[in-house]
Amino acid sequence: MRHLTYLAVLAVCLLGTAPLEILLRTRVYARWRRLVATLVPVLVVFAGWDLYAVARRQWTFDARSITGIRLPGGLPLEEVLFFVAVPVCAVLTLEAVRARRPGWLVGDEPAQGDAPGDEAR
Image (cartoon, rainbow, N blue to C red; front, side, top):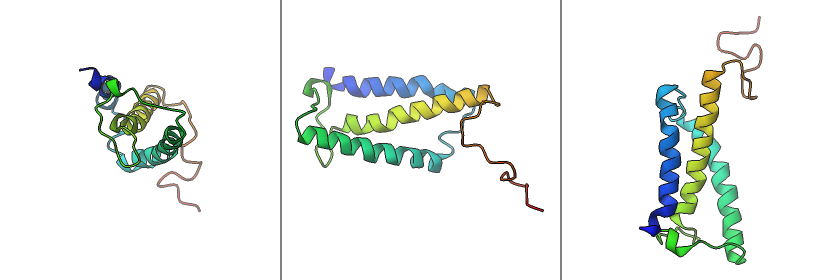
């Protein structure tokens, strides 16, 4: 069962933040285009970084803690899922805080006059 350790950690992270979507109505999964736009740069940069480090033998994965399923390029499935699960958990957490603190600005709010219905006169 140790080969499922990495997957189990990712599952616990996702299950731990899942109630935020339901209870606080964060709508992270409902705004899937926005979520994908957040995940793609993370996947590209960090998977590339991992591939580079593995090729240079600066980084390895404990074969006892992974399933052994490797994606093209040699990265374990769990490592790629890490680059999806952790940012999803982070975005869910951020949106949960925003739901509880509506006045808390994070920098992606529409500028004055940019909101729908604010046509320039």
